[in-house]
Image 1: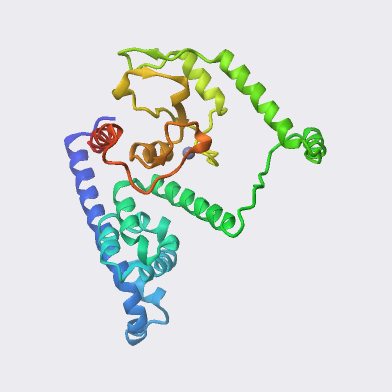
Image 2: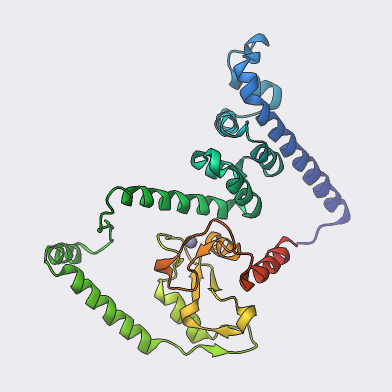
Length: 293
Ligand SMILES: [Zn+2]
């Protein structure tokens, strides 16, 4: 809805003050651990750091707890302090528990380039990959446990089936059948100057993950069809290289942070850095610039 000039001015003032207030609160948060260490709150006649922060800066107990926890972990790292000052708690919080002395610059960069939601997702996936890597380190167990949502009847049948010695080969046969069926249904890749993805291909790609994000382990709703080869480079819509992604994973992809992106999603992993020599990286940069506008 359109604002009148007076309303616009009110809104602009409010936005400016709000932006400044946030910035000052971030500065407050950064001082809290030192204030707590020196027990300045006690010397000022307060019963706790919470009472002190509420009285002096209007901070809630929750934001004091969060600030203390996060700032204590980053306060000796100037790069991260700077990131905190610039983008606030939410640009640091997702990865503080993953932080090691070796990964400070790595995370400072991710916190800078990724929007908050994507940073949260990236950190979550990073943690999962770390856990997986740790588990398989000692003697590389060849099996992985998964959980499935099945109807009770099917679940029991499946459990029985899983007892069979040839269970894996049975599952493999089922997968091959599905792949064969999919291949028959699969629309042809097309080369076209139009960005528009043909409806049939759109449906086919969405159906492949039942409208969910294709990133391994992600159960979020997919929001956009992503060309893993970047449409701008080839002008091709290819169902094998077109995948439905949630907003966070789409941003992660466009920051060049998915390893094996050209292969099928089960082979995707997080990547530490975008490859500067990949032509895709240049396209992604342009997309990034366009989005900042
Ligand atoms: Zn996702």
